[in-house]
Image (cartoon, rainbow, N blue to C red):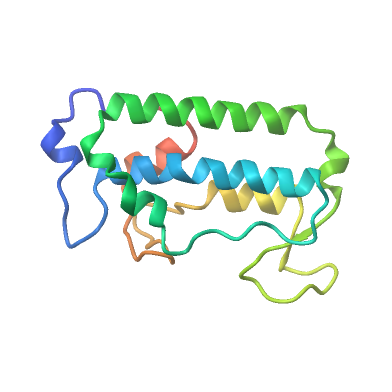
Length: 153
């Protein structure tokens, strides 16, 4: 999908928002959080690991200096590993609910608790739509980034 897109377009910034390439890099940066949160379910922790709401990893990574093909390969590898791990788990792992760190106190069962389906929906909606701002950054996401969330290139 990004084949043939000029590099200057991939790294151009508008209105202080992340570039296309930074958004792709951000999705790659978040893969470690998703893996950690799957481990939270496996280890039956009471609460999911909190995200870095400042997105320091992405800000410090300088994704614009990297090759987009390399970022895409790394993202596809990381997402494939995540899906493979999820596929290998017994459904009982997700029969429990874990408290999401930003959604308040535990009241069983409640909207604050996350089991398998809410967790996977939350993961898939990290970048909800091209026109919706990311509540953590106020970034409008492009259709390209939304598609990458599902591992297409």
